[in-house]
Image 1 (tube, rainbow over the protein chains, first blue to last red):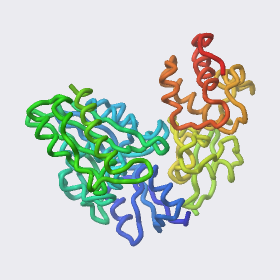
Image 2 (cartoon, rainbow over the protein chains, first blue to last red; image 1 turned 135 degrees about the horizontal axis):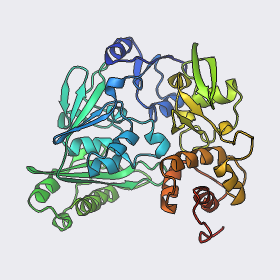
Image 3 (cartoon, rainbow over the protein chains, first blue to last red; image 1 turned 180 degrees about the vertical axis):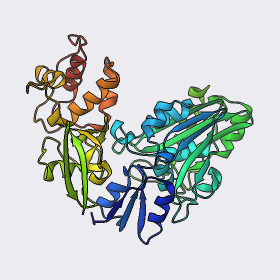
Image 4 (cartoon, rainbow over the protein chains, first blue to last red; image 1 turned 90 degrees about the vertical axis):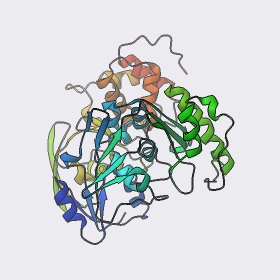
Length: 260
Length: 161
């Protein structure tokens, strides 16, 4: 990999100053960025590690809201046990060593189309909190590897309303263990939200037809006969568009069964 | 270059590293602690697994500078004070938990990480915890058996392979 300057600020303000220079890049846990840099697909001149910023660490549960610091690792989110779907999702990312480094902010900022966290954020209607604004999950995800984040903007926290019941189901791509398709179902007093990762060429999305049906009848049988439009699904050697579309339906059913 | 310092296996060390120097490169190339291996270099195989501040990480996917000030434990620090194999290492030997040995440092560090938090894991929990450690020789059965034995559990019912 090409060389760069490494800096590790202790607070958000210093991190923003460091990121303001040309070709600077924020570093979360590095579990995606470091392999990317090894392949020379990214070559920042300066890396700004966010792992030393204590104000971005930790999980706080108060009332019906869980607030997760942007630099909190997957392992610590799983350990906090805020609600079933989130705990299961965080504890199922990668492997134990990866979960000890990778962070929720890093995952959401990267918005890999096969990452798990975007499904949790979208299904819970999370608020993405940055250094200068709050972004609704529905506005945040803008397609594969694309988000509403500006160049010099850091995810400092993520706020999620805690669902009545929730579950995340992931069909793992057997080599990478990323989600071939992953579905997060979250049931709230005012309705059900279903978010799908891994399947679409446009990144994470809500399966709104299923949300409507499940909001009146929260059972796996209710969506058994539904079909998912496969036209914009990812197609590769691991699965065709149609295969992924079917997985969306099957995994949604499993998530509903497991959540109820 | 920047100067970093950390505590490795209880001993303070320091050195000058580039931004891009990986933690495993600092261990192996600068400190000659070559017990930590580089297998895949893509954070999949776990041969480079070590403990940083008490938790397992893949040292091929962490920058040395990010470990400045950290407490690091590697396979070189696992033996007992008198140089004899520790409980986990001895169990790997007793139960033939290795063949070529390339993955073994990472396996031992993963096992130590598991048993610290879960002293008597089930076989399923052991297998789940080794998700990020790949072995091409053993077929895993004897590794699982060794870790179960190291936890003090009866392994007579676990089939040898």
